[in-house]
Image (cartoon, rainbow, N blue to C red; front, side):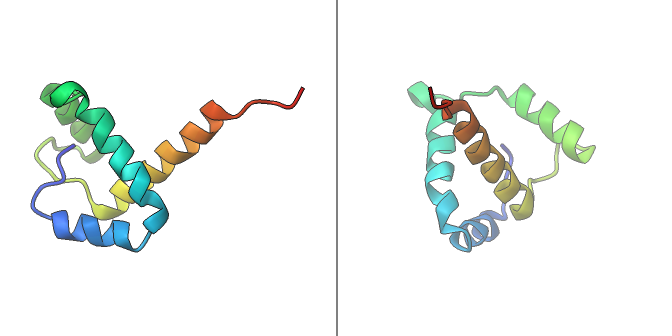
Length: 84
């Protein structure tokens, strides 16, 4: 994802939510699988276009935190098994 030059702001947002640190590492590892970007630049540009109306903008720190929280919740749901 295009997080642009605001990387210190994004790191600061993650430092305020240390429980998302491992989710951020897992997300980065998933996207860099096999030493190459997992998602194509065209896909990421399309996602930014649909989210912000402009593919050249950067993701805000708030949106990064929301995305990581969503991924964490989806992983819990996917791993959940009902008691038998």
